[in-house]
Image (cartoon, rainbow, N blue to C red):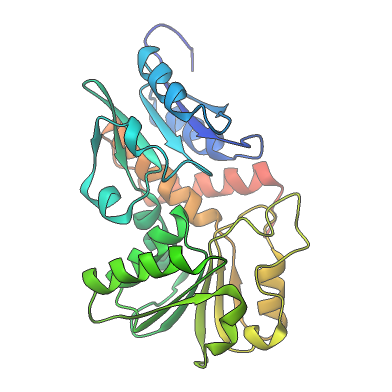
Length: 290
């Protein structure tokens, strides 16, 4: 691909951003689909996000991804917000529009496609959500859409978990939702749980921690899904596997949320065969040989 005056420039707004594998997704897809697009990581420190978005629009950026810690902070900087992103309360994809950017949430549909790909069933199950931030909000609404029976939102601060639980009970009255402080996780009595880890605890390079370290909790877990993808096996996953659970990292979620963003930017459809080739490129970039 030749970079020239017609190149669509897209990027990732996050901090830190050095570990990101998103450029692999978008630049590979652009090459394979013959689209003149270049995707770059853009480190933006806290407090500068509004300036960064305004500057990106002024410089003609075609689209952006937004990651930690800005998924909930970008709303005031956007010209338009998609209905799903508005409902979830978190944005991770920006598409250039008149006067600025329109915000979307591709995390939720990306996680849904990852679950479908890995054969993870949500309907009728009790789910434990660890965290209540932007990624957790997407996972929580997915649980409602996929008809989980019970949802426990376990968070360091109760207020955030309670606010999310109230929203979900209003939107999905058929799903029982309980907010718990992190220290009260032992109040969960069900077995065969689907546990979704949505915090940054255990993320590279601080890999020797898990949000819950009690083996007793993991004895209740049947499926452990960590939204972290680096390392490819987090301590959360190891603890779950040690108790007989099946563990998954978040690389497929990253893949599919990126593909959906790419499709929004370019008005194309990425075939599944190309999605899987992109996944192999991502694993190669991260040194994952599973």
